[in-house]
Amino acid sequence: MSILEYNGAAIIAMTGKNCVGIACDTRLGAQAQTVSCDFRKVFQFNKSFVGLAGLATDVQTMNNLLTFRKNLYELREEREMTPRVLSNLLSNLLYEKRFGPYFIEPVVAGLDENNEPFLSGMDLIGAPVYTDDFVVSGTATGNMYGMCETLYKKDMEVEELFETLSQALLASVDRDALSGWGATVHIVTKDGVISRELKARMD
Amino acid sequence: MDTVFGVEYEGGVILAADQSNARSILTYQSNLDKITKLSPSSALAVSGPNADLVNFSEYISKNLAIYQLSNDGLQLSTHAQANYCRGELATALRKGPYQVNCLLGGYDASSGKGSLYWMDYFAALSKVNYGCQGYASSFCLSIMDRDWKEGLDQDQAVAIVDKCIKELSLRFLMNQPNFIIKVIDKDGVKTLKFGSDPADT
Image (cartoon, helix red, strand yellow):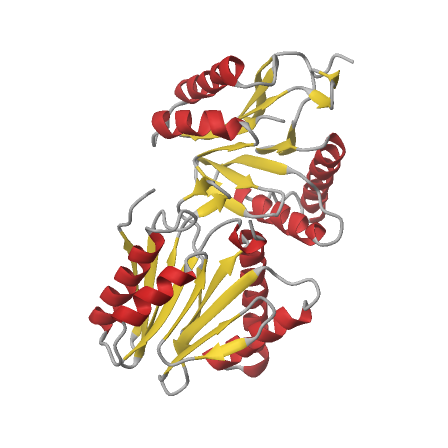
């Protein structure tokens, strides 16, 4: 089993009309055993969200590092970090460890300074990809790509985006042993963030 | 091969660990205390090679002691101690890892509640209501899943722990005759019972 699949994770981020959504499962496992059902993998940084899939220890380490760097940035620059900057920072932090990487595959989603949706995904050494529809990461990527490709439409409103994101995630994790056991969805609009827990199969 | 588990209840935490110190076909010791007191209201139950077990738990407890001395008696909350532990383990991971899986249990007077934290040797940290490390998990987690509920009292929690120990003695391949059980609550860290006195040299 690959080290990226040790703890299990599933993350999807999608764009909508003037909004973005990001969803993750909440399982923490040690290979086949489930340790916890409330291990969140999506973290908020003002109007951006970072979803971290992969080895749980590195998810927590990277969250701490990003929080530290974001705080430092805000103290020095006296402004908020835009999602593009956050994504670039994350990419650089990962490439610094090119020959001894953090075992995470992150996803960044947020609204930029003009409240335009922003999405990016990257691999464990920080190679970014910028899309305008959806990004996925985790142990069920095959399932998630299929679900997203089928269900996604451009310019969905908040409620429809929420429904699409939820159904895509739930269907994907139900066919994956290592992810699931609960799910959380966040939708970011210019007026704020709506977060909901999904009622998921706890198996 | 170590068995370490813990249960949180209303007003505290119980930690239990087997007392054997063994390698290959030899048992060096059968009265080892694997639950180290970290602060007046928290303890760390550790499983792993004896060297890492002792080194890591002593390192953490002494650093917490020096924090208290340097900061005018300020005690860290259980959450803070757990995150400190995680940080040290995570830093050591890519230098010279400690192969320790642990359960940190503590009581916070400010909330009147106990909290239990599960941490594996990769330094993944999770707050749990009950947890096991090692092979014990295959036997004990389902018992805890069934019997644990919100608002248990100490006797009920001890009953769950005893049930787990009984199951292990019945079905687990390794013979672990001695278990040490510690309770962390408003009165501090106390040994509830042990199979063999750790103080016997």
